[in-house]
Length: 472
Image (cartoon, rainbow, N blue to C red; front, side, top):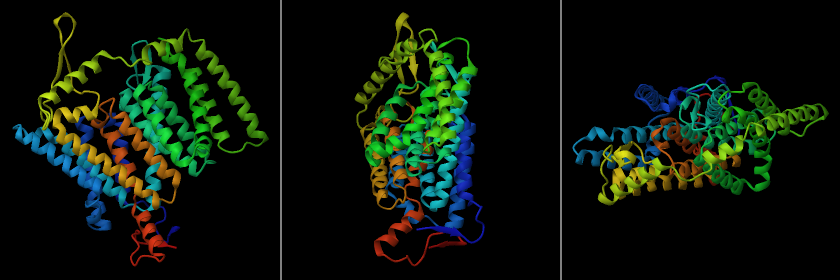
């Protein structure tokens, strides 16, 4: 199926533009974590829904979409549990976040194929810019785009939190690799993937690394190891070169931005050149990039035990605060196994050295957090939501015209689900809304039209295309 527009070819509908604005506010506004940014997000999503209703009619079919129903069920239980505890407003966090997820899924599900691709391109560009801010932050030791954490500097990006940055960049990076598998010769996509992967690596997030490995394995399994290597090889090599040049700034108290910039340029050159079979001229550029990369790598290795510092600080599974918080959350779940302690009532406090009391707001495990606050009922509803998303994305493979795109979406959502077990990422709107957009993008109205046409071998009576579109 191909689509051309007779008029307004360069115009995007209001819902798509509003969603892009929502993602920009979330990503560049500290993840949308604080109330001021959340107010903008709520207004933007409400306007996007209203614009969708105005231009494309009531979304009755999307309201019956299993993930949307699952969002409603979990939100209703959170509200009921908070009401039973005497404070219905305590459920506002759950209700608003799940309403946002449902809204993004509905709006994305009603986009055409072209609109969906533009939306995903914009999302990738926003993630690449965020990753670039993290690289700049580490290279110049600029807070809050990077933060000193023990003996190392870690990229925090515009989200201003290292693990949340990884929670955003890893899924979008996997999406970029999946789309690159569909267009392996695209230098722009290779460059974007290179920057995103380098930014994710600069966060030094252990859970992010695990999530990427799992997601990459899923992506390789879905598109095949050879296609995966062809797509991921150039940007991964470029990201490794950029990260090697960033190493001195990561481990030293004084930044070395010149080396970092040189390595980033070399990494981008390597990724873009290798994305296409090189000619003689591009081979020379590649040789120059490799030489610069070796210089950057040598500088990184000579950074005074840099790798050993990272290994000592990050390659460990023990972390006292998270361990204690998880233990307390389990204890709360044991005390309230069925209905939980209620939203905002799972107080994670424990006694520390010197008779001091330590308090953590989150268990750094979203599944455990839901179990402590909403009990086994809430956890079952959460698992049901994830299962509904997984089932619908799996079914989408039958009609998505781009296998790499579908595989990238599936790998990204798997990575997000894995990472959610190690940090409070689902309390960061930027991460949650991006994942919702990926789930909704798997079933846009254009792909739904395509499956109807394929199944009945004739065009449907009413094409769900914007006014002025012609489907051939």
